[in-house]
Amino acid sequence: MIVVSNTSPLIGLSNIGKLEILRELFGEVFVPPAVVREFGETLPEWVVVKHPGDRPLVTALSKLLGDDESEAMALALELGADFLILDDLKARKIAKELGINVIGTAGILLLAKKRGVVEEVKPLLRELVEKGFRIADSVIEVILRAAGEN
Image 1: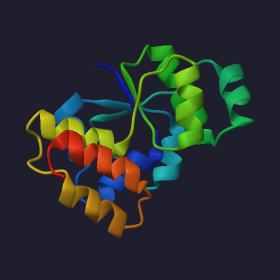
Image 2: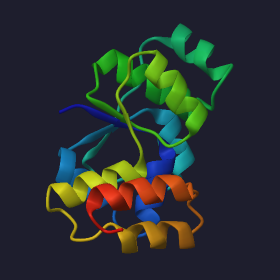
Image 3: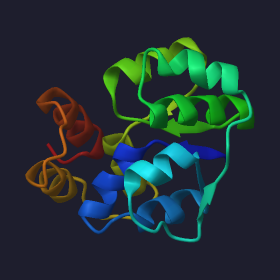
């Protein structure tokens, strides 16, 4: 499975000490250089840095989105990624319009529960919010219902 991530999911999961969930779910995760710059810390060896080749696409997307989102989207298209892990609503909408399968940080936690990587989603979502990660209450409600934790 090919998975590309934007910065915010990496930061969110790292802030709650759960970045390793991505490795357990996917083995490796691809990120473009702009994500590495924005993350600002050394990433684990299972995070593979790859430059997107379609610079004109990156430039066009950069008129609407941040550099990290633009590069991640272009890389996801280039690699034919199964998922792009992305939280920003505007960026998610554009990615979907481009035919990219998108999953957010909360969705990653739900997938981790369904695959037995974590036992509960609720305390992880609570900790994310406590650490400043923005997730709409409606999204939390949907995730908890899907996890059977409402």
